[in-house]
Length: 407
Image 1 (cartoon, rainbow, N blue to C red):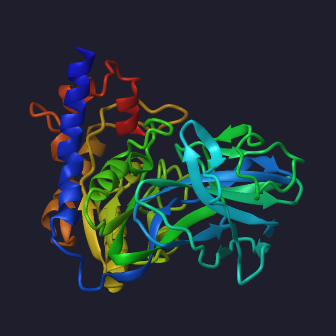
Image 2: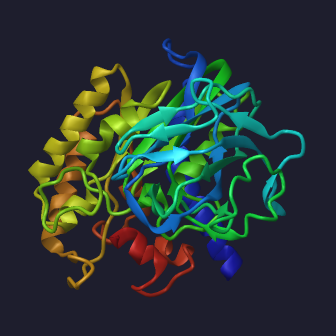
């Protein structure tokens, strides 16, 4: 029975993400503005300062790139830092294997420089990009980026739910950026401090697709180190092309909203405010997938408010000559509000349906991914289908699929 449900889950999920992957892959060739050169092949959205502190330690951060190339460069942000942060040294190399997850492939570790210098300081709210690193990478390859933080009690500007395990030495261990061995990197964590993006220098015409969304894109309740978010599945499918012509960048934040004027206030920077930093600043972007709005509605936003905020995002993306793909909002089941959740009701479902009608019929987008129609119940389109819930392997309203649809 479990195997049958798993197959059903894969089938339904393949239908959903297949429409998205086909939209980008079936064009036959890259757009006219695709070219060889730098594109962003991995990224994440910073959302606040971490609770832990780093003191004279080395972090080893794991990022999986989605396109091949003959060199990489690294972008580090200190978006939420209240003080400058100094990196003593930085290095990068391909991760050895899942069996040695904190180790670098022997002989392939490279020092990273910034304007020719091994050390760099990032101002509070600032950003830096490394010099090119002559390291060949393949799509779906894990890159290990090691960063020595020489300061004391340094808080990290970070993405909170990276869903990928990274590593750190104990505080006080010093600079181990030149160590290929992972034996000293005993601490594990699933946030992503400071590392904002990995750009790849491609040798075939390639562009990047940015998935701009909330928890469903971020991957809330998916598997740590499983790379099974919908964005990951699309990236894996596109990686089968020869040559690879599309990279995927995940810029989702759990609980994210389109706009700020909601009640209660958002707990992360809204989409309209982070668009430049998290989307338009990336290299080689051709498409932006906009998949948010459910958390605005949960916070009492009207359909007009969500639509107007989305129109603002669409207009700014199109002003850069990029394509915009709209994604319909999936159903949420009614629940009473509590201390941690403003709940859901029939009035909010009505707003969701109004927003989805606009997404499908307004002509504002260059394409649509209709997740709503894939996962909703044929008997009641305002609910998730029974098979969707069952196929995820969960049976009650406190399950991960419910939280996925209600978070």
